[in-house]
Image (tube, rainbow, N blue to C red; front, side, top):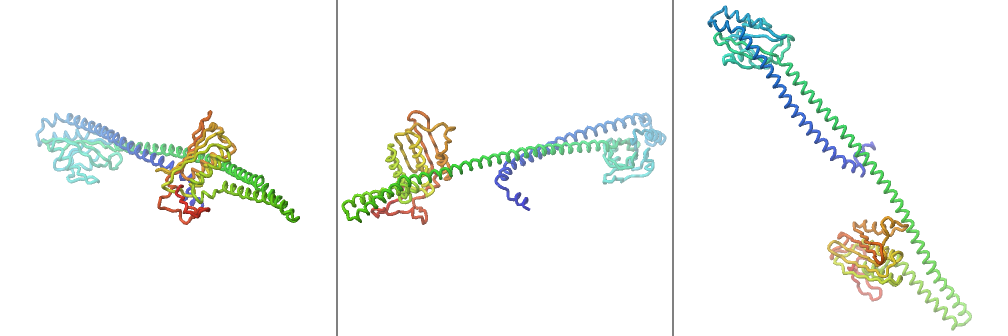
Length: 492
């Protein structure tokens, strides 16, 4: 039962195999039908030509027999009167003795339908057979008489074969002796011709069947090759995908551990030490207050307050790195501007940021993706580029939105050397790919050649001017913390 469910509910690989093999099967079936039709049509023409040739040969043979018979009694018929019974008996004897082969003979009927000569079927002699028809209703004797009155002619009918006693098709040639009103003729059975034609047709059908068999075998082999290739490719791709997924998972875990280690170091080296200094300052101020030394207690208390303010600032910085509040409150443009300013202040690299007001707004996924790409790019510039200047540009256009980040550093290494232990570039590509966007990286090695990273988002991730992001308060106008004024988030 599970097999049937699997067959009727194919997976992606099976659907792909079916999609690949179905056109092949249809094409081969069409070719096979066309070949069979053409083969049958060509063979039928050949068979008809063969039948015509065999019949013509039979008819020529019959005409020759009749000519020889007429030459044999012409000296008698030519001098005899219409009522010369002696001459008629002589001619009848001559025709009765002219038998050939196993079934060949001459027959004579007068115009009244009475049989006068039938050497192989003597029971027909002296009997009137007018109106005689064969098993298929074809007139026999009456047609003989009609052809004889016209002079000569051919007639095809079914007749009992003397050698077998079975009915077979016969072709007869009849001539008329008008003075005596006789129909004289002979016939030949063409069952051998029909047998040859039937054998030829059987051979044609056998060839067509063999052709179908060959095409079927070739098609089956092709399907097996396609299926095996598809399965092999699918297995290979799955293995590569599994390997890449495993590698990516390891990289993600490593990035998580690196981020956790960075946060832990910042907490330990920054906030922890500051808070320890605050504690010592407060302890010192507390001991001096207990001794009543108010003047000496104020300086350590002031230092503790300053260190506490530094700790608050450090916490805000770490929080901003993990998830910038300005991205939720003001939008992508101000968030990137703050990121650029912090980057310039921290690294000393000259930084320029430019943007235009969007006519449409980015959805939350697009904002986060572009912000993280900008973070990755700035981190790479800081760590690896050796740049002295960086420019970031964000703008919307008719096809979507584009963020362009460029620097004047020494560029990226060749493609084969870019796969280092980090996942910065791959992380950028995967983030933009999830949004059906495009990431372009233009770089060349050399002195001050620089690198350009361009992230392009499609129009599907921009909302219309009258659209909102539902009930998400981050998409709406938010009050400024200091002034309480409304700040428009349509910048991005």
